[in-house]
Image (cartoon, rainbow, N blue to C red; front, side, top):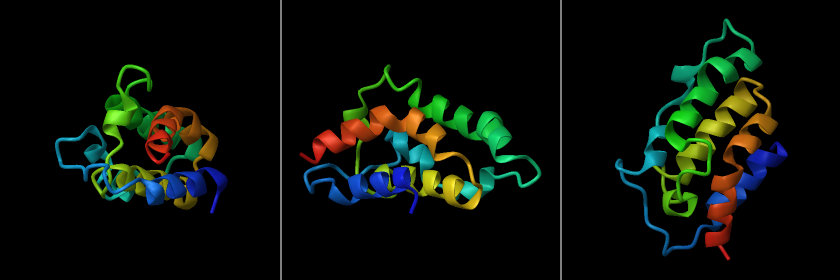
Length: 117
C-alpha cells in the first residue's frame, strides 16, 4: 500500500469503539458511494483531480479549517471507511497522486488520529 493509504487505513482500523457509526446525515456519508462512478478514463489523473476529486472534497470538507474534523470522524462505511475507500480507489486504480489527497485530508486524519489516543 502507498504510505498515505496505509496511514489512513491504520487510523480507520484504530478508531475506538466509542466513536459513533456514521449515518447518512454525517458529512462523510458523501464518500460512501462507488468512487468509480466519478472516474473518467479519458482524462489524465491530474485532470481527474482538478475536474472531479478536488471539487468533491472541497464541497464536502471545505478547506479543512471551517469544520470541526473531530466531529466528522465517525466509523463505518458512511464515515472514515468511506473516505478510505474513496481515496484508495483514486490513488491505486487511477494513479492520482497520494500527495494531493494527503494535502486535502490532513486535518481530517489528524483529528481522527487524535481520537484514537
